Image 1 (tube, rainbow, N blue to C red):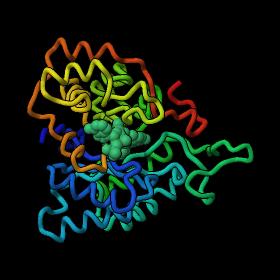
Image 2 (image 1 turned 90 degrees about the horizontal axis):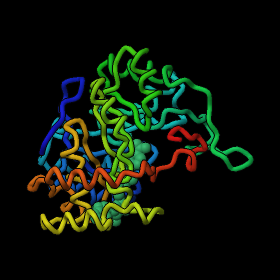
Image 3 (image 1 turned 60 degrees about the vertical axis):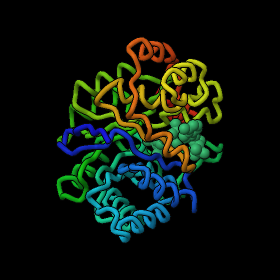
Image 4 (image 1 turned 135 degrees about the horizontal axis):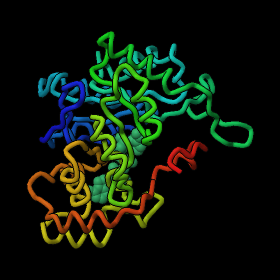
Length: 307
Ligand SMILES: NC(=O)c1ccc[n+]([C@@H]2O[C@H](COP(=O)([O-])OP(=O)(O)OC[C@H]3O[C@@H](n4cnc5c(N)ncnc54)[C@H](OP(=O)(O)O)[C@@H]3O)[C@@H](O)[C@H]2O)c1
């Protein structure tokens, strides 16, 4: 497995398993199948509602003696309802408890805006819009820095943080985020964010690297797009493998976390280190960019941070 070096000097695997919507037994088995296939990095979040079964899967791996805790790179995320500084440590401790872990390798602020606490995980107002709360990202970040300084977490970072917000945080913080986890795939390439993060030493993790396989946006499906299918044929690889490989070659500073709960796809998605795209093919894929976010903050949260 290839690795990138974080600004903490820790090594992050270039490929890990995504777990959004990996629920129940499927979520449990996906972790075990991925481990057996060679994955050592796992992307989790409190908001995915699967910490209990994911934690059981890790315990199974450790109890079987196949790996020690330090062999895995485990990421999770602080949810929007616990951005108030005094809530950050208890939220982190709860996540560790749910996962049956002593520490995380990386803890991210899931979104750069807050929601009120005590009204469920996805609070809504009377009109049905998501409720937000005025907590500055810098205040939440200070509490994240304390987790890091106390040695409770190996690295801290952000997610869904566009250049302007990241720059503000970068200028005012004590500890520079190790990672910004953002949407990156052939239809959402964010080249300015990619080069800015390279310049300031913030690693990027590409979420939805397959464009969520279309999801509700069938036209941005990295596993069926004709250009990617054609390139794949030349290498005896699938379109999904081409989309994933493109990110590996695009920048040393990017890691990818494709999600699947199907064993054959989990294996397919990690089988991308035995071929190389040509410069012309890289160029062809670069032309697919539409700056199209499949994960739309405006629609999901009524906070248009990407617009
Ligand atoms: N920080 C954030 O706000 C944020 C937001 C979104 C995602 N994420 C993280 O990033 C991870 C990945 O993103 P994502 O889950 O949104 O989307 P994704 O990885 O781009 O795509 C996942 C979808 O593609 C399918 N799939 C997987 N491998 C495939 C293949 N080889 N061929 C065809 N289809 C395939 C999966 O179905 P099956 O499971 O049925 O195979 C699933 O429907 C998430 O799981 C999560 O951990 C983070």
